Length: 635
Ligand SMILES: [Mn+2]
Image (cartoon, rainbow, N blue to C red):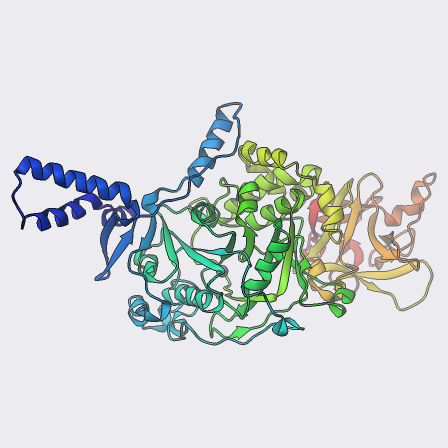
């Protein structure tokens, strides 16, 4: 596959120039052959020396001759890392390898045309499908619809508040290199991404569009696009994945800032100005637009909710957190929303800051986790992150990734990527990650020395600082827990139903309900009724309850009676504490055995969820209604 492409592009360029020159010189032939060879060589040498950018390279792409301009990749200066052993030496070699881009891998055309003079119809037609069965084959979104939607279609202006009336300076904002990496992207979605960027980005901000073809099966999909104004193409001969593809693009890009986009997006009105303006004010800020939704079946453009910031679960899965009610009601759309993490597909950053931060971890494979890693690194190393609601970019969301993650499988790739940054950035909080992913412990993160080097060099702060200052809304698990977090009974999550009666000391009834995914649900944003803990040593099974003074105090699950019987309800009540008399709280002390929650002093009684609205203790039977799975174990 890559051999075919190589053959197409590596025709010796000096020969073609030489043959043209020798043809021309035949007419005035008063030279001897050796003299002629001498003159020709001198001419060739002269051309090569004085205009190295004008060395041509020819190849064919679907009968369309494209004349390639030789491209000079900016010089790469590696970081001042000193390896202490062979393993670190190897890491440093990988670091350099990922950042050195061969001139031969970068394509730019000699004959540029504006996007509307590009032969769009011919480009799209070369990859059309005719039947419905194949519509989702390439990209997992509807190609039959996408191919017929105009490249320059209008989309609704989804900006809210006073965004539409904002005015931006027409000069003096930083320039940006748009970086779009792709692997087997649809022709129509890729081209629509490019056309929307050219149409809706002021020419004095848009420095260039750097495409990275990450070893797609059809090399022409990217190659044909270099005819379009401002477009350059980097070809990865072997699949590198999003992370290394973006590193390569950053090494080639020359704008003041880098703007990473996905390959199936449409940018909205005045999308770039807020991003550039903010970076101009604070060169260490990473800014992201609000990601609107382009429906994968109909390609309808829909405005997304503005009241969200990026968060992360302890399993290191990205999530959206709702603003608090106060945050929502006082929101000024023209101001940035501080965001603990970013989704990672679309953002802008100063080029200098991106390099200073060490780009990405080149030992992370394909995709996944890099946005969380990047978020921790930016914040901990002196930067900031914001979502700018006046900047909107639509993205075609799909249910699954249509491409494969290689033979290791996507799960192992995710886990290895996560393990790498968890060890680099999370200090003692790694326990909470492993508490949620006990199996992740068996996968080695590999050598982290180059990443640690950047951490030291930038004097980055610890994870405790990040939690306290950047992400105070994150629940910090209680150490010395047998089990912590959400607990599931089948598809449902254990949940407290507050009692209506005012009987003092009783706060609710244990049951199960739809999992609320914590901060993801606006009605649970300040108090998660599904957050539980089973403590080591004391055996207390607890949940925090908000008291009249606003503070949260752990209350205890147990049966109403101190001598529980089969079928007794499980309620949330004041904890009985009397260290002198063990029996005083036998009805509130529990064990987690296998997947059962049992009363410690009555081990024949298991927590039973046959009735979702009202959990009880019942004789242990091993039935499904007694299987409880926790979010986090042994921390
Ligand atoms: Mn995408």
